[in-house]
Length: 233
Image (cartoon, rainbow, N blue to C red; front, side, top):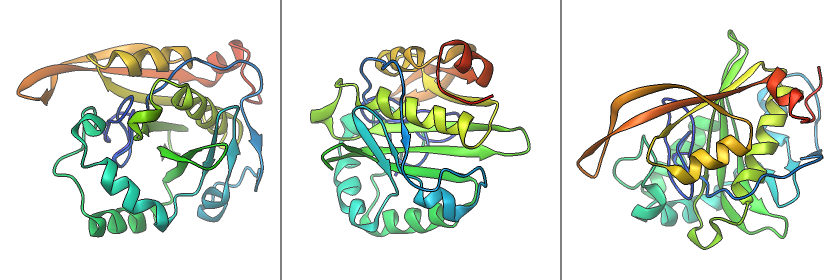
């Protein structure tokens, strides 16, 4: 189940590329306090803490992915419009494929993933951090797979929550991603969230028989703090 925005991993959905098969359709940025730490607000980066972390913003709630979510992900990932920007997306996954993916993610200490839902519990997509603890950074992938909920600001709210979590709770220094240069919706979202362009790979992607460029983007902790975000020193 690919994500939406990030480097090597997948892309797709309403916005971009990233982890499994998820991407988001983002809207406007949100100002002020972006999240509340409802469970386990610890610094210890263990799988147990990661799996129980629930983050709530102004529009979305991020919670652990559950087995009951998988059939909906399978249905969404059969839609070409949803998977269009998923870099690692090949043949649409079966339910068995999703269960295998789910078990791999649950046992991977370097993957931090949440389901994205509205505040009233409607499933929207997912978002993932892929950690590189040796370099104190992470790659983010995000996706809103429910097409009817694109361009409503859910993706932006989710991205703000995750980036703040990366800097504040995981104490990372850098969050990065990659995206297709043609994915204007995603790029606008990432720029609203403080990401800056820092590189380009020419004709790095092949989609619908056409080559496209890949853009590298990132945000640093000091930049996040300078923008008035909430990450601690």
